[in-house]
Image 1: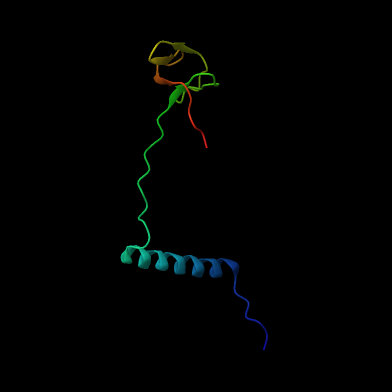
Image 2: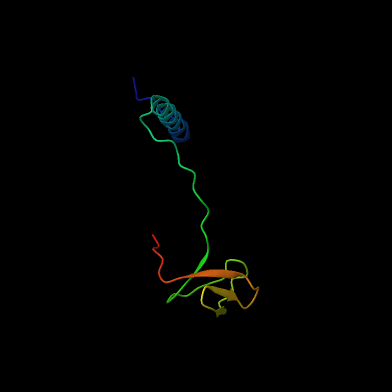
Amino acid sequence: MGARIVPLHAALSDVSRALQAAGQQLRAAGLFPAAEERRPAIPVFVIGRANRCPDCHGEAFAVGRITAECCGCGLPLAIVASRRIM
């Protein structure tokens, strides 16, 4: 006879279920690393870049030796010389 037609969402859910089961088996066997907890990003003031306050989205900062304080809301940010952004 002809080919069986399966809705795409049903096929994807079957594949997703199979991948989840395989991942659980690998974790149980100790072959697959558990998902690491991700730490929240820490906002900092980066020297030489355009900075924006994470609280009020202002762009004006009073820069000191250790911290830069937002002129709009007063949020202090730690100053770093460079930051690797991926």
